[in-house]
Image (cartoon, rainbow, N blue to C red):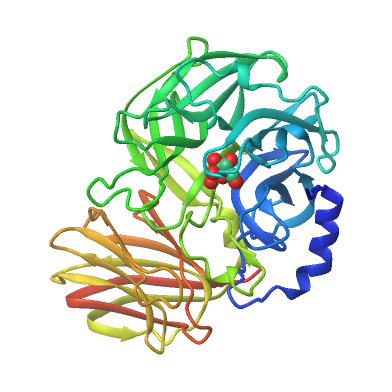
Length: 487
Ligand code: FRU
């Protein structure tokens, strides 16, 4: 059997990273230095810098025994890689160091993660999972706790899956630590478990705080819980949610619920749940609270079992979304790009009051930019913008005024997965405002000030750089601003 170590992983990455093909590499989003990346882990501000860890298989651009990659940054955009933080090198995590979170205690950085262990030949079914601790005093070198696991199999309560028991997010409340974990009831319903601890080492099960009503996925992954104002928010990534109208069309989804969390009693009361993202590629988001009081969320900008063209010959796969600031607005959340991104703007373009009736090629070229558009539909039945336009290629955002649906169509976006996603959007004061981020092989659309977001990976040719605004019927583009984004 291969023994994976941090040192071996670091050497391998340094020796091989020159092979990476730059074609679809993103400019201002985080990717692994080499090999595979999935979920964000351990997102935290520690000793003044933002740390982000990630699920990482450094040897090939495919999922494999998980390591934790590690990057730090002062602005969440210009990341710098640090050595691999943890490798699957112990009995209790030899199948992989799965997702988890970070918390600072007495000046040390504590990582709490899931140890994955295979128990038989069927990788899909034969496994067990426990919760483990690794500690660092400098934020770079982590030592696994000598008495891992801190939550062994025995502490899984009755009626809960004996194998899906993962992705601990630890928070502090009223001087106590609380951990939420994703699982299911073994009968097709995802759920969230709550544990508590005084010291991060001894944990006590409190309760199941949320559970699928039968339509919310058969297993829940990557939970996170936090307060905003006087409300509490639970987010998680439910697996295999069946489509509900235009929502939940991906294999796996993301959801948030706003409610009331009583940590001590172990209850979370909520009324409604909503998708976090309405596009194709957004999963396993995690949040942190920074020293400016902002709640910031970052997600994996890909989807399981969706074709990832860079896996063939490019030596890398997987990227993180832009960090998004979460804002509570009434009974819903708004998601907005962090303002730090503005420091990377170059070559500004600003146009106003373009009267449209048909297509207008903006002559603007680019593969890494931010664009802000405000449309006033007037008598148009359809309007929108085509991006990454080239020989037979286009990624199309369309708003149709009859049914008030915004769609993102990547059927002709290039190579890679196709499809269309739609979501209902109301005009605000008669206007539609889009803030769009394009970055080589990604697009993120923040709609109406962050009311909804659509995220997708796209793989157009390098020459497909055009931008076209269009309408069917008369429409006013009240403003179009664009900046190249360079890091
Ligand atoms: C979510 C997930 C987690 C798990 C990790 C393994 O994408 O399946 O539940 O910890 O990825 O890489």
